[in-house]
Image (cartoon, rainbow, N blue to C red; front, side, top):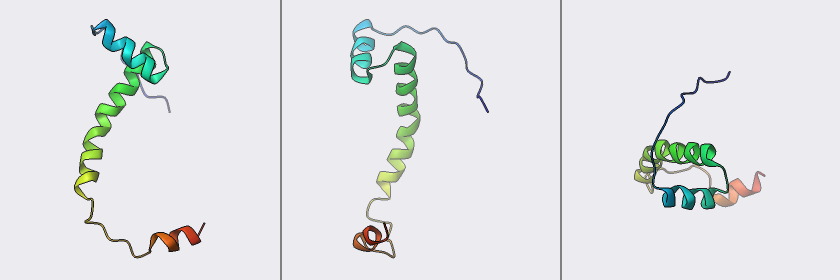
Length: 68
């Protein structure tokens, strides 16, 4: 299912857009989309970092590697 899209107009500093496009290797639209996805995911990353050292697995990394 295709999600509906919104067309927006925004002003960004030209040098920032150029740097972002060089880093992403993509056009303007895809660069902006990627940036928005990263901002949206940052909260999830922060929550995952809070769990560091608090989650205990029943299998060791060696056991997981053996299952491949």
